[in-house]
Amino acid sequence: MTAYDPENIFAKILREEIPSIRVYEDDATLAFMDIMPRSDGHLLVIPKTPCRNVLDASPEQLSAVMLTVQKLGQAVLKAFDADGVTIQQFNEAAGGQEVFHLHFHVLPRHEGLSLRAPGKMGDMEAIAAHAEEIRTSLAMT
Ligand code: AMP
Image (cartoon, protein in one colour):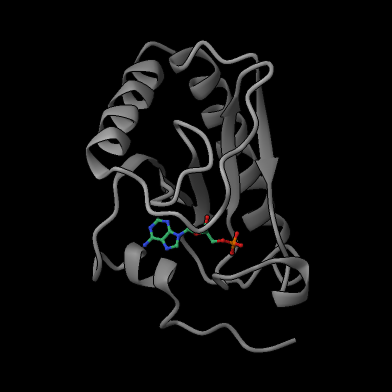
């Protein structure tokens, strides 16, 4: 498999070289808003240490990330009064991956509402407001 590229965009977010809207972090993981949200509250969870995807992740990276995915899944369910949560994850270009630092998508879902098409920039003010709702939901747990 191709080596991890430390210049990928999520590595730059981790080093704060480019901005992100962060909603949660602990020693091992970071959660921040997707800038092209496919549903309101769409966020990403990443490990703070380098790996491309599930295929080269260590057991420690996987377990830390999954615990944060669960925490954020529960938080968005409450924050958006959602009916469900879609968790998505892609491995390598042929598997649909575009950014090569392990990440899980957390997408709040409502009955009868489809995901929006991928690749469309969101309204940053709306995304920031959704982030604040998630932080509030986390603070109540
Ligand atoms: P994928 O690798 O296919 O899971 O897709 C990468 C995801 O990262 C897409 O949903 C993008 O909208 C998202 N994305 C790309 N650049 C940024 C960024 N600078 N901040 C937040 N999300 C991003």
